[in-house]
Image (spheres, rainbow over the protein chains, first blue to last red):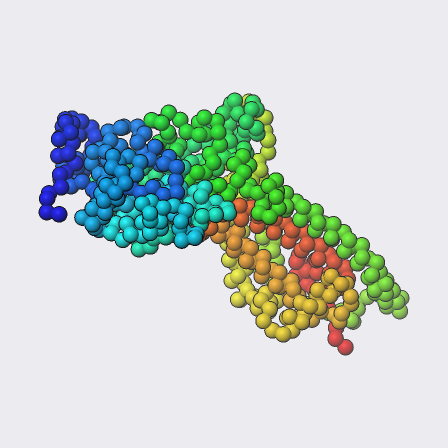
Length: 368
Length: 223
């Protein structure tokens, strides 16, 4: 406990990075969290003076695509420094230790840095049947997540699983999978949804905490505003086609070749908040829409239940796969019109006498 | 030609009629443009996007009509407190025994088509009032979900007031879906509403249809 923790700069120097590398690294960090150039000095200062941030990274019901995305951030130095050399005290996927050693490392960190460590959660937590559907080291995920959250400074929910349940919690959700915020309360939780989230976004969130010692500004759903305040639609390079009303009708038509808007083949861009249109993927090479495929809204809650992916309206629950609100609306409208027609006919049959009487009455009066 | 058995009554004040027809225009615009936004026309065109803006225009019309609709709705609520007794808000929420009894009577007239004593109400009958109350709830729902979605692309004050609905309903997709489903409530309401006005006019002969233009209704004098 008393031993002094080395700072990031010290660790980097030990690892043989030059001052030049360090400054370059800090510049990248500043760019990731969207700071202006004058902000670089803040990052440099933080890295020179602050001890390493203890981090534990849990994997529950998930596919590890978040980790995969993270280690592929466009500038490996970031992932390298954060994951390997500096911070990670526990992560099933990447740590060298296994079994008892790994569990021991986890418990040491949790004890030694109580109230200081950052807890990263990848994957949802099953709650049905006492949580038996995900056990690590003989304990349920629910148990582990509660214990670890107790002493955590903040929690980052990586990916859609931990942020909103993703595929495990889609209907009928047999394991009772829940996102982190539904099983933990009283701790700041930063949601970084996406399946997977963009690696640069993940790095940006961690770097923000490193640099400023506090969590980034969050929106109403608990996502960092810097990356999730705009819809994919708002930053889409195909947006002018949307405004001009030029849409792809099917995947192989002329309009698809011209690169028109993918709205009519189910693009979820207008309802999805993410940074794909700006940061893009694989070192900024492309993103789904640029590759001709509509956005499936992977960073939005229950995107698996909002299907089918290639139509804009979801199927109407209880009316079969093909039924949308529009089809049911049309049917209801037709039924209404038919009912009205029937009603009008019976009215005329039943009220004919009444109305005839009224007319006669009037005529008599007029004649008097 | 004076008919002693019929009496004229001024029922719908000018602001009520004005509200009704402005609401009519706004809702028609909202339904047409809203439907087009949900499933835009298929246009085969080789022009570049920069030459046209029709979809943007459709959306602009939808949003402007939404503002008109919203403030008109607010105005009608206000008029429910200051207008005449036929416009009063108490007509819309059944609380008194007579209102419940009249609801049953109206159902008998409308569905079973039996003749009951002339309906008591001169303004809205109790069932119509209750139905309009439900439409007010639908107005509120459409306003909240609509502005909630709009808040993502607007910096103005009013839409931001409704941004909370998006996290509450679990994201823009769900909000959009329910906003769309509710459109069908308006369409079906409009069909039934217009028919029932014609029907009541026909069987009662009180001039219900023209009352929303001129404001006058004609009722039987009590002897």
